[in-house]
Image (cartoon, rainbow, N blue to C red; front, side):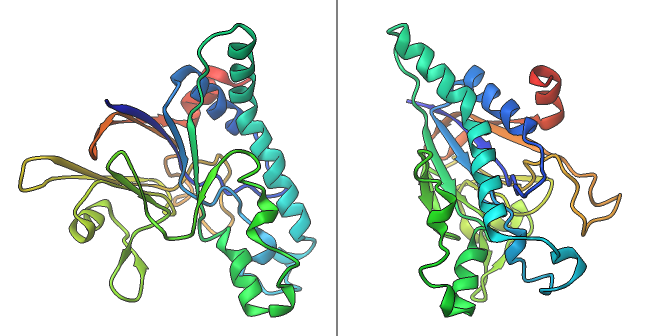
Length: 257
């Protein structure tokens, strides 16, 4: 039996962000009623632990770990609120409950927490991935760079190429290296490639790494102008599916205030 999967790319939540785009995604999920909701990782941005900015620099001024964590939990509540409200209404009316499987991949931004502990052992026991409380919100979590197979499609924050573990930077490269349908985030915009196995079965690889509506300070006016949205995989069965791109702009027009 075929399934439907709603794929949410990187959200990169940080203090000061607005969360309307997450509410719109949650409302769309209620209309869509997917069997799975899979977040590709980097729901959290964790700027307080960035290795790209030195402590004491202007860009790091005022950044705090607890503020990062609190913003992530606030944003998660916004994303899931429409889903929980719909589930409660179904239960109250004694209707069949819609209960999608929630899968959260850890991305390199969440991995900043593990890296910080590794680099400074004094932080052991003081900070951890548990602080994000993804599991308490109902998500099955998947370790950073560990692929997970869902209905024959492999999902990972990014897929690697070569023994050094560098990210595949194109969908075509993912198919050439991994030879099956794969969905990755991490890289801004969208890229898609198609191929066939020897038995004729279709394979599709996608990189969709921008599920947020803010601009990145390290990008310029040209490189910030990339696609942002979610992806629906319809008729998912044994690694084959029909893909549907849904932009955040469309969701804002449909659900935004």
